[in-house]
Length: 170
Image 1 (cartoon, rainbow, N blue to C red):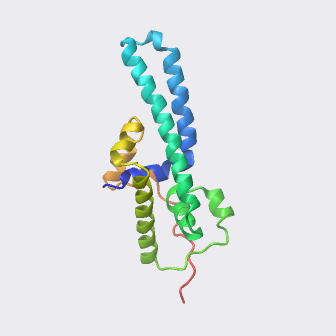
Image 2 (cartoon, helix red, strand yellow):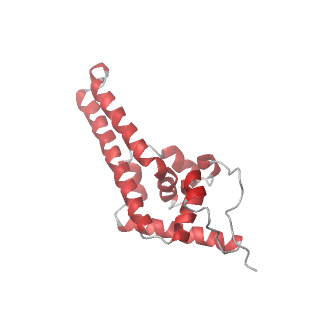
Image 3 (cartoon, rainbow, N blue to C red):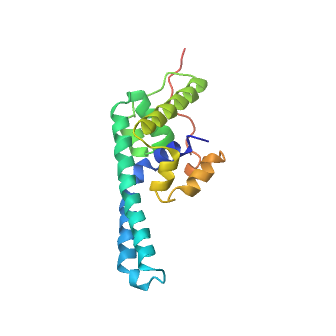
Protein backbone atom coordinates (compact mmCIF):
# COMPACT_ATOMS: atom_id res chain seq x y z
CA UNK A 1 0.00 0.00 0.00
CA UNK A 2 1.50 3.30 -1.03
CA UNK A 3 -0.28 5.42 1.58
CA UNK A 4 0.65 3.27 4.57
CA UNK A 5 3.27 5.80 5.67
CA UNK A 6 0.60 8.53 5.68
CA UNK A 7 -1.61 6.41 7.91
CA UNK A 8 1.34 5.68 10.20
CA UNK A 9 2.02 9.42 10.55
CA UNK A 10 -1.63 10.21 11.21
CA UNK A 11 -2.05 7.45 13.80
CA UNK A 12 1.13 8.57 15.56
CA UNK A 13 0.39 12.31 15.31
CA UNK A 14 -1.01 12.81 18.83
CA UNK A 15 2.20 11.34 20.27
CA UNK A 16 4.81 12.50 17.71
CA UNK A 17 6.28 15.15 20.01
CA UNK A 18 6.56 12.68 22.88
CA UNK A 19 8.08 10.04 20.59
CA UNK A 20 10.57 12.64 19.33
CA UNK A 21 11.52 13.55 22.90
CA UNK A 22 11.99 9.88 23.78
CA UNK A 23 14.19 9.31 20.72
CA UNK A 24 16.28 12.32 21.75
CA UNK A 25 16.71 11.01 25.30
CA UNK A 26 17.65 7.62 23.89
CA UNK A 27 20.29 9.22 21.66
CA UNK A 28 21.71 11.15 24.61
CA UNK A 29 21.87 7.96 26.67
CA UNK A 30 23.63 6.15 23.83
CA UNK A 31 26.15 8.97 23.68
CA UNK A 32 26.74 8.90 27.45
CA UNK A 33 27.18 5.14 27.44
CA UNK A 34 29.13 4.94 24.20
CA UNK A 35 32.31 4.06 26.05
CA UNK A 36 30.73 0.65 26.78
CA UNK A 37 29.74 -0.06 23.19
CA UNK A 38 31.93 -2.71 21.55
CA UNK A 39 31.50 -1.16 18.08
CA UNK A 40 33.86 1.38 16.58
CA UNK A 41 33.49 5.02 17.64
CA UNK A 42 32.59 5.95 14.07
CA UNK A 43 29.77 3.40 13.97
CA UNK A 44 28.41 4.46 17.37
CA UNK A 45 28.55 8.14 16.41
CA UNK A 46 26.72 7.36 13.15
CA UNK A 47 23.93 5.58 15.02
CA UNK A 48 23.60 8.47 17.47
CA UNK A 49 23.40 10.94 14.59
CA UNK A 50 20.68 8.82 12.96
CA UNK A 51 18.69 8.98 16.19
CA UNK A 52 18.99 12.75 16.38
CA UNK A 53 17.97 12.98 12.71
CA UNK A 54 14.92 10.80 13.50
CA UNK A 55 14.02 13.14 16.36
CA UNK A 56 14.21 16.12 14.01
CA UNK A 57 12.13 14.28 11.39
CA UNK A 58 9.40 13.48 13.94
CA UNK A 59 9.16 17.12 14.97
CA UNK A 60 9.03 18.16 11.29
CA UNK A 61 6.23 15.67 10.64
CA UNK A 62 4.29 16.94 13.63
CA UNK A 63 4.55 20.54 12.36
CA UNK A 64 3.58 19.36 8.88
CA UNK A 65 0.40 17.73 10.19
CA UNK A 66 -0.32 20.87 12.24
CA UNK A 67 -0.03 22.95 9.04
CA UNK A 68 -2.33 20.58 7.18
CA UNK A 69 -4.94 20.69 9.95
CA UNK A 70 -5.00 24.50 9.88
CA UNK A 71 -6.44 24.32 6.35
CA UNK A 72 -9.11 21.71 7.09
CA UNK A 73 -12.83 22.20 7.47
CA UNK A 74 -14.55 21.29 10.73
CA UNK A 75 -15.87 18.10 9.13
CA UNK A 76 -12.38 17.10 7.99
CA UNK A 77 -11.00 17.81 11.45
CA UNK A 78 -13.70 15.59 12.93
CA UNK A 79 -12.92 12.81 10.44
CA UNK A 80 -9.20 12.98 11.26
CA UNK A 81 -9.94 13.00 14.96
CA UNK A 82 -12.39 10.11 14.78
CA UNK A 83 -10.41 7.81 12.51
CA UNK A 84 -6.76 8.55 13.25
CA UNK A 85 -6.11 10.67 16.32
CA UNK A 86 -8.74 9.09 18.58
CA UNK A 87 -8.42 11.63 21.35
CA UNK A 88 -11.54 11.02 23.39
CA UNK A 89 -11.37 14.39 25.16
CA UNK A 90 -11.28 16.27 21.86
CA UNK A 91 -14.17 14.26 20.44
CA UNK A 92 -16.24 14.81 23.57
CA UNK A 93 -15.21 18.46 23.92
CA UNK A 94 -14.63 20.24 20.62
CA UNK A 95 -16.88 17.92 18.60
CA UNK A 96 -19.56 17.18 21.20
CA UNK A 97 -22.20 18.97 19.14
CA UNK A 98 -20.93 17.75 15.76
CA UNK A 99 -22.68 15.06 13.74
CA UNK A 100 -21.93 13.95 10.19
CA UNK A 101 -24.75 14.24 7.70
CA UNK A 102 -23.95 11.31 5.42
CA UNK A 103 -24.47 7.64 4.85
CA UNK A 104 -21.95 5.01 5.90
CA UNK A 105 -20.81 4.69 2.30
CA UNK A 106 -20.26 8.44 2.06
CA UNK A 107 -18.33 8.34 5.33
CA UNK A 108 -15.81 5.89 3.87
CA UNK A 109 -15.54 7.92 0.68
CA UNK A 110 -14.83 11.03 2.73
CA UNK A 111 -12.15 9.18 4.70
CA UNK A 112 -10.52 8.02 1.44
CA UNK A 113 -10.53 11.59 0.06
CA UNK A 114 -9.07 12.84 3.31
CA UNK A 115 -6.26 10.26 3.18
CA UNK A 116 -5.48 11.32 -0.40
CA UNK A 117 -5.45 14.96 0.67
CA UNK A 118 -2.99 14.16 3.46
CA UNK A 119 -0.81 12.12 1.08
CA UNK A 120 -0.73 15.03 -1.38
CA UNK A 121 0.21 17.43 1.41
CA UNK A 122 3.11 15.22 2.50
CA UNK A 123 4.27 14.69 -1.09
CA UNK A 124 4.08 18.42 -1.82
CA UNK A 125 6.34 19.01 1.17
CA UNK A 126 8.87 16.40 0.07
CA UNK A 127 7.82 13.44 2.20
CA UNK A 128 7.64 10.09 0.45
CA UNK A 129 7.37 6.60 1.86
CA UNK A 130 11.11 6.09 1.32
CA UNK A 131 12.06 9.35 3.02
CA UNK A 132 9.76 8.58 5.94
CA UNK A 133 11.30 5.13 6.48
CA UNK A 134 14.84 6.45 6.11
CA UNK A 135 14.54 9.55 8.28
CA UNK A 136 12.59 7.93 11.10
CA UNK A 137 15.31 5.30 11.32
CA UNK A 138 12.90 2.35 11.22
CA UNK A 139 10.83 3.48 14.21
CA UNK A 140 7.60 2.71 12.40
CA UNK A 141 8.64 -0.41 10.47
CA UNK A 142 6.30 -2.76 12.38
CA UNK A 143 3.41 -0.32 12.04
CA UNK A 144 4.10 -0.03 8.33
CA UNK A 145 4.17 -3.82 7.93
CA UNK A 146 0.81 -4.15 9.68
CA UNK A 147 -0.74 -1.38 7.58
CA UNK A 148 0.61 -2.74 4.30
CA UNK A 149 -0.86 -6.17 5.17
CA UNK A 150 -4.21 -4.48 5.76
CA UNK A 151 -4.11 -5.27 9.46
CA UNK A 152 -5.09 -1.79 10.64
CA UNK A 153 -6.79 -3.01 13.82
CA UNK A 154 -3.47 -4.26 15.16
CA UNK A 155 -2.23 -0.65 14.96
CA UNK A 156 -5.09 1.15 16.65
CA UNK A 157 -7.45 -1.52 17.96
CA UNK A 158 -11.18 -1.68 17.60
CA UNK A 159 -13.43 1.01 18.96
CA UNK A 160 -15.48 0.26 22.02
CA UNK A 161 -18.20 2.58 20.78
CA UNK A 162 -19.01 1.84 17.15
CA UNK A 163 -19.84 4.42 14.58
CA UNK A 164 -19.29 8.15 14.28
CA UNK A 165 -22.24 10.25 15.27
CA UNK A 166 -24.33 10.97 12.19
CA UNK A 167 -27.43 12.97 11.59
CA UNK A 168 -30.20 11.09 9.89
CA UNK A 169 -30.49 12.02 6.25
CA UNK A 170 -34.30 11.96 6.39
